[in-house]
Length: 239
Image (cartoon, rainbow, N blue to C red; front, side):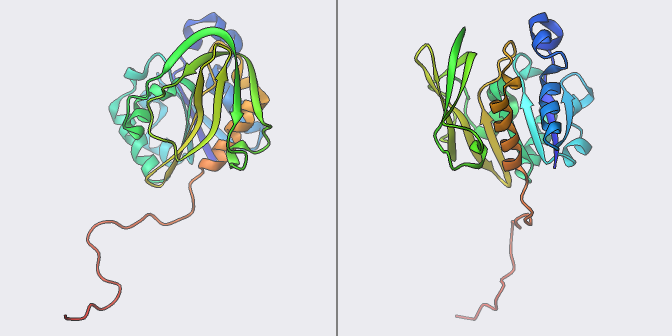
């Protein structure tokens, strides 16, 4: 299994509070706990050449994790198209937190992916609504985060293929926080928590969900479907 973690890495450069929480960047924090689970993980960031997502990197990526926030528009359309084609061809994609507004997620969803939000240091409780799902393995009834950014409904996404988590926030809102989709041969998981000023990715249960999601999103060993004009498998009799 080869995972690439993509991160803007802009908050970490600009905001000392974020650097304090994630001194090696959000991508570095995720890389560390994935590697602790024996998963081969590399990183890529916005300011690298080609955003660190060359054809070679993507061709050697089984699952791509995406975290973005303040620089969605700086991601080149060429790279977005490259990632899009890889997902359709079977690469898994795990989109985290504000990655809901990324070009790649909106392209795959075909909707605005807009929502309500609020930063008020409020408690979030992520309820497991599909306890039999592999992404919820080794998670209890819920995950409780003492402080997180609120995302609230309506979340303008297509109806998920599977809904794994639903969040409740201290201020009263709810949110579809763990959603799966299939696009082409690829599997996609959107997971809501992860505001940059909170230590969410240091939480063991959140880490477990991401590890589970990476394993779930792995490409399957099946042949790519054949499209276009097809010769008959059997002789077609004259009628």
